[in-house]
Amino acid sequence: MASSDTPEIVERDVKDKDHQEEGKDDGKGGFMEKVKDFIHDIGEKIEEVIGFGKPTADVTEIHIPKINLERADLVVDVLVKNPNPIPIPLIDIDYLIESDGRKLVSGLIPDAGTIHAHGSETVKIPITLIYDDIKNTYNDIKPGSIIPYRIKVDLIVDVPVFGRLTLPLEKTGEIPIPYKPDIDVENIRFERFSFEETVALLHLKLENMNDFDLGLNALDCEVWLGDVSVGGAEVAESTNIGKNGISYVDIPITFRPKDFGSAVWDMIRGKGTGYTMKGNINVDTPFGAMNLPIIKEGGTTRLKKNKGENDDGDDEVY
Image (cartoon, rainbow, N blue to C red):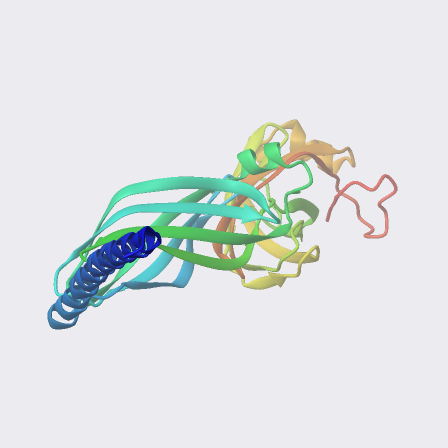
C-alpha cells in the first residue's frame, strides 16, 4: 500500500471521534432539556392538583369619612381575591397620591394582614392629606378649588409556586381644598324690644368661597355687641349656597339690652357699634359632610329708621 493512503485513514478516525463527541454533547443537551421539561410538567401538575393561582385585586371605592379646612381623611377599599387553598400574606402596601403628576402624599403600610384561603377580603387603606403641606408645596393650588388626583397602590403578596407578586392598582377622582364661607350681618330686625328682654332677628349673608355647592344643614354661633356677648344663636334651616354664590339666613336671638350699657344706646342714637360673630356651619358637599368655621370680627351695626339710609355701607339695625 502506498504511503499516500495513510492520511485518509487518520482523517476517518478523527471524523469518527468528532461524530462521537457531538453525539455525546447532543445526548447531554437532550437529557438536560428533558429534565427541565419534566420539572416544568411536575410543577404544572402540582399547581393543577393543589389549585394554586395568582390573586387579583381591584379598587372598589374611595371614601372621605372626614374633611375640614385642615385635612382630608381618605379610605381606599381594595377587594383582594385569593384562589389558593392556603392563606396568603399581604406583605406590604405601597401607595402614592398625585395631582397632575405632582406628588401630594405617599406611604408604606407593612405587614398588612392575610387573605383567607379561597376567599376575598376588602383591604382598607387609610390616607390623610394635610392641606397646609399641599398649599405650601404648590402655590398654584388655592383654597376653595377642586383638584384632580390619581391614587396608585401596589399590593405585594407572597404566593407559593409563584413567589412574591406585585399587584398594581390605579384610581382617579377629584378632591376639594375647602375654604370657610364669609359671613356678614346684613341687618338686625327687632321683633320685640324692651330693656328687660328683646327678641331680634339677625339677617345673615353667607358667601360661598368654594368652587362647589354647600348645602346648609345647621348653623350655630355666638354674637357679641361691643364687648358684651348677646349669647348663642342657632338655626336648623336648610338652604343651598351655590358655588361662589351668596345666600341669606335669619337667626333669632334673645337678649337683655340693659346688660349692654352704651352699646345699645349707641345704636339707638344712630352711632355705630361693633359686633362679632363666631361659630360653625354644618354643610353637605359633593365630597361629603363638612363642619366649617364662620367668623366675623370688626363688623358695625347701626339703628336707622329708614331702610334706604345706608350712607356709609355699614350693616343696618332696624
